[in-house]
Length: 101
Image 1 (cartoon, helix red, strand yellow):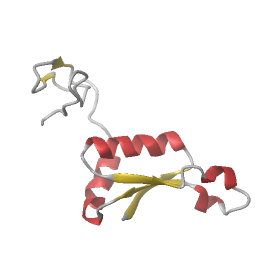
Image 2 (cartoon, rainbow, N blue to C red):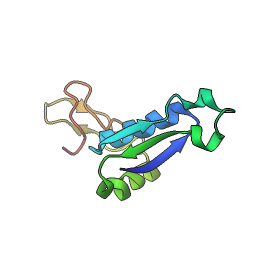
Image 3 (spheres, rainbow, N blue to C red):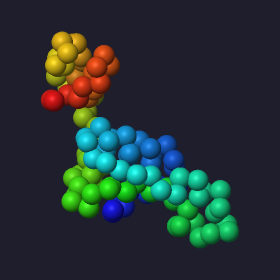
């Protein structure tokens, strides 16, 4: 396992987790509750962290986090289930299918 992201902001950590899971990268979140121990523990040790389960996926995970999600306003697309979606959506609301799958 390799750490690919850390932050004191739990929302940012879980957003990173969601971006990676959307790309099919298996991850785990560690230290999500340690912020309450800050002061007793060094602050740098209290950040919530996102770790990839497979070290071979680390470089791809870091690239996904750098690039973020697709820019809003992309070309409209149609999911395999037939649902028409606007370009800013990466996932189908009806069936959960991913854009380009």
